[in-house]
Length: 258
Image 1 (cartoon, one colour):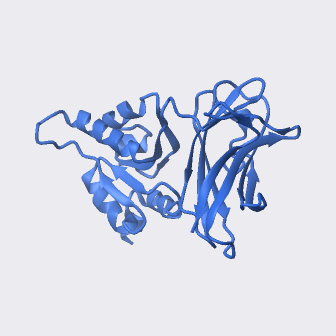
Image 2 (cartoon, rainbow, N blue to C red; image 1 turned 120 degrees about the horizontal axis):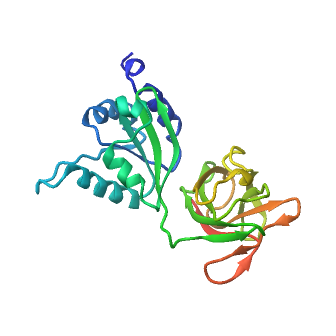
Image 3 (tube, rainbow, N blue to C red; image 1 turned 180 degrees about the vertical axis):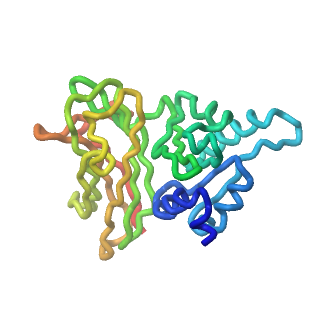
């Protein structure tokens, strides 16, 4: 009953549904909201309050912005606010200032009841895992984040894409897990973001958060495996330029399966 009556109940329901992903922290600047969220989310998340108190009596907004920056360096996190401004889709001043930084991106931003919720992502400007040339644009795979790979459990994989110009074509993403003999043991192919964000709809400079759950068979041996990531269309795979100066038709990463 208490959850159903809370103005952020829709946000709590969404966060509970997202609890098996890689975003493991929920942060808010509001103490009362922290108290309301903690009982429902503490089993799945670190529920943190980002408040402006400091012993040196510095401006609270500046302290909150610094704490947001520290939280972002530890990985993406959920940010939630409650109140009249939040219900109208407006962030508090301290959050808005931090979110305006050029290397900070928001994903899954939405108003739920009286609460405003977004996933906060920090993407270093000089970091790119691979780039793919389409002819009319360059698609950068800025980062790849992996969960723990365990036999018989899904492997969370999150890809972060960014195009420098409009992409004319629609490309399919492939994520493959291969054993030491280069045999594919698990694979997921789809248009980005479960088909909801085709590459020909991307806006230049907008970060695309593209999540996957790659099935890991229960009967494989523990050890090192390879993860292949790339893009293709009817004409084949796009060439990938790698940070070491090499090129291939995919990005290859090592994954330890436990």
